[in-house]
Image (tube, rainbow, N blue to C red; front, top):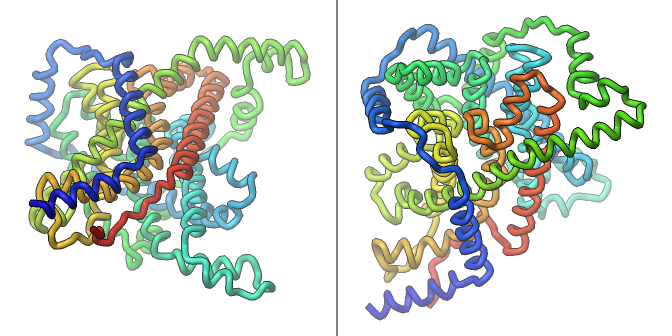
Length: 512
């Protein structure tokens, strides 16, 4: 008993990092405050009846048309494989130039806009074509790859790089001394991004592209829950089995098949494209008075202020409220669920169930998850809060749970609840916070896009602007979303650096 007591005291002394504690309590307090002022009402008369219908559908999955379903699956995978591959190649190129400010700014801007917003923009020019789907994935993913690849290369062992002769060429040194050292981490991250790409590709079905998301939305809207369950289970199975089909032996044949499968024939009107980029997206005062009119610019300023007060401010406020609640919700979900896949708490057989549960939660795109909950609760922030918290929490829980596989315990370490509370969680808490802050900007992007489902975040007003063919308003609001995202990313990076939050856990046994 004294040994356990000493272990607890030691763990607590390690955990009592004042700054980390203050940060955690502050985040929790802000989230509670946001929860008090958020729209969390249940706007449906009989939620339990709808839960029953959906539950029955989930238990009795069926397929309405197998050829149509397999066609959508192939399209979903083809978009993801080609989009992620091209983005990874361009992102790697930009990563080697990431010390240039202009590259960092461009990367931050293009990744700050959600792929669905990119799709809505390109939809006006290219229509429901392969080009729209691919560009919607390639552009934001390129910015993400550039940032993550650059950070991975910087954090890798630099010994070989520093030992090179001064006359070694820039690209040769990067290729042989930096890229090779970080190759395993880069491959692992790219595989993870492919999983994200499949989710993004599926979500593109919400704007009409023929991916799995299109069928999911249609079936759920029509109340065909068994058919929706069939699509959902197929989607989860594809994600869960990625390790068997997304490997180096099959990836080239799959890419070749993707190129053959996707229809690249599209009629693009140069006049339409020119009109969209030089006229439609310009603020209406500039369209009417011309780019060289002083009155036009003055009225554009008034137009911007008016749009800010009427829509952007409300949308930004709701986006930030939802983001802060979902951020803490994700953290709580991750801390509760990571033991499910940790060998420190469960046996190998028991962890299979935990792995499956986390795969289900993180595989379902947050937009689809929120849409399902929306059918039960009605339009409010509740579906978005649960969808974002579960989806992002499951991703972080998976990463933290995998980290515990390398943690070494002392022979006299506590067991059960004490092991969780006093030994393991304190040792993974800083990596947990690091992952949580990495997801902050992602959660904000997702909070904005969930406005498409009726939550009054920025996405709600952007979607309305597209529906009313007011592309100038849509672009203005998208730029506000991008600026918010860049601001949050900057704050997140500052906090991570100030508190030395690293994704590396303390794996060695504690000393007494």
